[in-house]
Length: 357
Ligand code: ZN
Ligand code: ZN
Image (tube, rainbow, N blue to C red):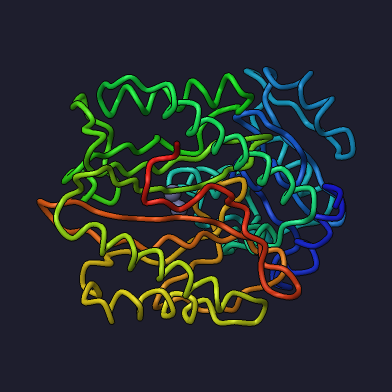
């Protein structure tokens, strides 16, 4: 799907009360234009204009060849160029992305764009982004292959060290193998530290005979991957063999219901009911999954309160976890793309609990 087709899809969904949409969320700007720089704005309408500053003049010439461009600098402000574009098109009601625009920016624009009404909009581009095309799926699959290889390589070469050492080894291996970066700060947590769902790696030695939780993702062409594995050595903390089996069963229960049309909250319920039955319902303290794409957390969300249904092209994680404070925690996370007849799991690595050999 071309960037022009993506822009057309958003135009088809944007509400009638706005005449054009000012896209400022970096991932949305990238999705609709291909621009990878840190500062760009898209005025999306029947005619669109891309704005950036002088640093990105040359880069945007190459990356955004099919949209009119306006470059601002020390002497011309973004708001002046925007005001002119709006006036040229007779636009007086401009949609803005409320989730991204700060109150300060909104106040400033209201002052600088006289006669223009700013209308808050919500998730118009994000909703279109939830349905990945074949190229996006292939890119995310490639990112996941790379993440798995980085994890296997760094575990195989690990001669002992701290959680932070192993986290850095994983990130080094991923970059060496071609990742442009990590999707988020790699989580490496041993033993009782794994009872924190978002543990930061510590300068504490890893005990490979116990429990080790690793949550990691790599980025390729701007797209994220996401995977969690919890490995158990010969002497895991109390109960964790049973907990690991229950979590894996919860993963399978969620996958068993994933297909187009199923309510997102029903996927969560499928995983949650297994852990409730095993007596760990109150120790599963987060939602079952989230969408993955240009951002590590995007829609749809698989949670008890989630609205909406799964659609073909959604990429969602399945990541139930059980956390026993002072003892340890187990989370197992795969992710999949929703297909016409169910799903295609993008994660290939064995779920354990044994360390990969
Ligand atoms: Zn994760
Ligand atoms: Zn995740």
